[in-house]
Length: 352
Ligand SMILES: [Zn+2]
Image 1 (spheres, rainbow, N blue to C red):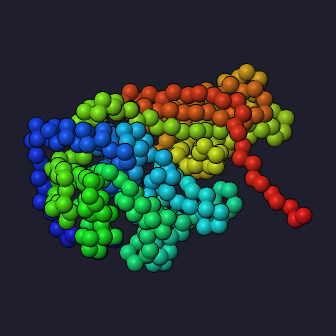
Image 2 (cartoon, rainbow, N blue to C red; image 1 turned 180 degrees about the vertical axis):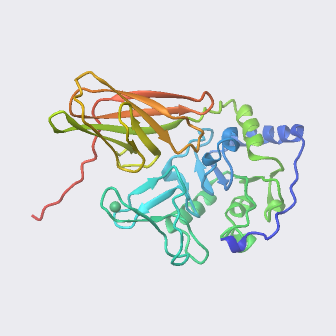
């Protein structure tokens, strides 16, 4: 897709805030009338904090959502060109969202998508989700995108030059064009540069996406929810010999598959800092029931999240799930302890 991008950046234009305000008002009225709504996002966010927290600005190129709900359920998202934070197992298709760039080095060619990691569930090879030049777009996502384009009352293009294939093969086959040319449907484009579909837009707004969306949400009487970073962590303590404990700290996702978001783990009183997965610390001294084990957790830091001190109350051999929430606006973590993590039970089918 890189070959389709312009070699020189196009000239940017910014309208006055008063003009953007008028356009946001008209757009809000249109959204209130729409029964379905489609978003086309490339480098945009629905949240003004995206500029300060750029790791969040990783949105799929085309999304359709219920009007006004502005939520992003996965089954309604069509990620046409992949996601640099997502990798998946070649064998069992388990997906992993990473708090780092999970893209192949392509040292064996642009079609070698192996990331070098293995699946925590089955040991299979993990591959990135990026679509490189000459590779087919994912059928499910492409079909979904066209289906959305046929159904949407309004297509809102945010922060896109609309020059990436398939959008630029011919203007007639662009996804925004399908909406823009359909009778009764409306096309709105918010982008600083001109786009090939400008001639068929009903709303053409030259401003930053965050400025338009903040105004739009205000006109719709919808509060912009604060972004909260949510992490799940399991602390497991095992007795190995008398008075010797093995402590393991693991980041997990909602189905308890291990997820990488920590850089290091330190246990107070232990000299060793665990800097690689699995984060294992051996404790030689006796640990009494009820004793506090204090962990210093170091995160990747993409959200400027500071280290967190997690105090684990030891109640014997156990696994405890902690829900960690970080609010970038306040800079504070909250911790919720849950006694028993729910394990995903793999089904084993025996021959009849
Ligand atoms: Zn797997």
